[in-house]
Image (cartoon, rainbow, N blue to C red; front, side, top):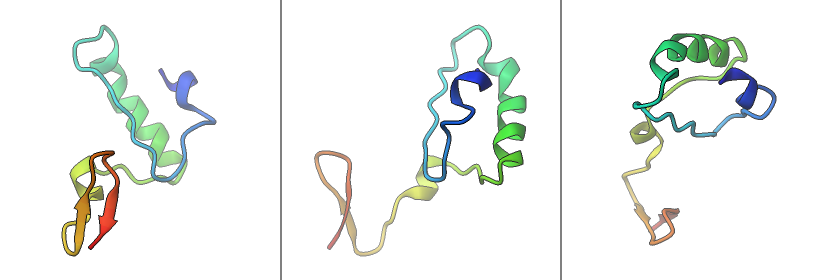
Length: 65
C-alpha cells in the first residue's frame, strides 16, 4: 500500500481506504507512521471543511459566501 502512495502524497491530499479489504487494517498503523515521517499531518476530512461564510456547491467545492 505504501509503495502506491509514496512519492505521490502531498499536503492537502485525501487518502481513501476501504475497510473491507484484506490488508487495510493491518497496514493502517504503518501508513500513518510513514505519512507523519514525511512531515505531513493526518486529520479527519471533517476538519478540512470550512463552516463559517462558506457553502459547498454541487461539485463538492467549498465556496466563500
